[in-house]
Length: 331
Image (cartoon, rainbow, N blue to C red; front, side, top):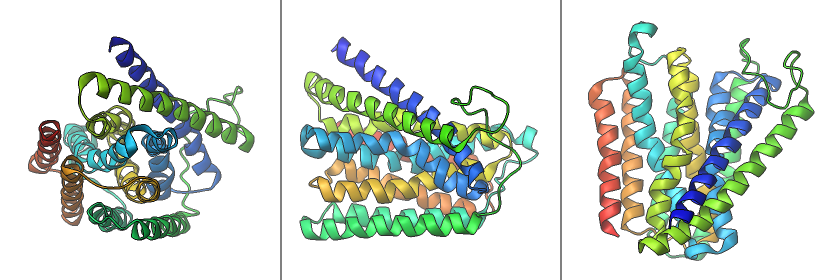
């Protein structure tokens, strides 16, 4: 068991390193495409930071592990954490840095954030509903529709923000040895490829060791994937939002989370619908309902002008803790 825990930790490290390398390259891709914070946060940064959790179910499906339990757990677990704990992290950051920022509220692109949250609530609720319906044909049809819908979302978001490029550039590209002139397109693409390859390797190790550890502990692989996968791979990346809040880049900070919520409710769900049984047990349903409630609360906060208050943060934390408690005792 100690060996499995060590290898699981190694998988987590590979996931995080790969995501860090990938995110840096994607930020430079945003500069190349002349996109503003709205599109970079909701699309490029969101997809980049969501990549580890997205590849875990893909690798699990290819490996045929635990008849889809690990895949379903990773797919549901990411929106669960994003809609609850990640939102709480942003709220804590806004309240903690209010002296430096001169405000506790978030100044965001309200249209972009409301669009993200509304899309998430609609499509993730549909995913939960389909988890209670056993029709394979319906699952495949909806999966295809989700892919098409996400492509449309990407097109609309990028089109709306094209030409809004910001003067501030991201940190040096890791694959640019000069550290002087802006990197070339080839360097950006090469770093993206290496980042993805590192994430895939980490995902493969994670899937293998989750199955081994679940067997050793005598618990369902679904539970480990539902809680551990997003907590270890998604939350550290969302801490980027804390830095952005501190720098008063609120649209980037919030869009990083809401954009990932959109992504996780569509493409990974489409994969789950098409390639797993997609039968949601009570732990998965509990996590899903908490995510939907957290997303609904986020909409309420945005409609109130983005003002962050302790009761909002406390509610997000309670939603997360309550669902985790149910998940651990239900199995």
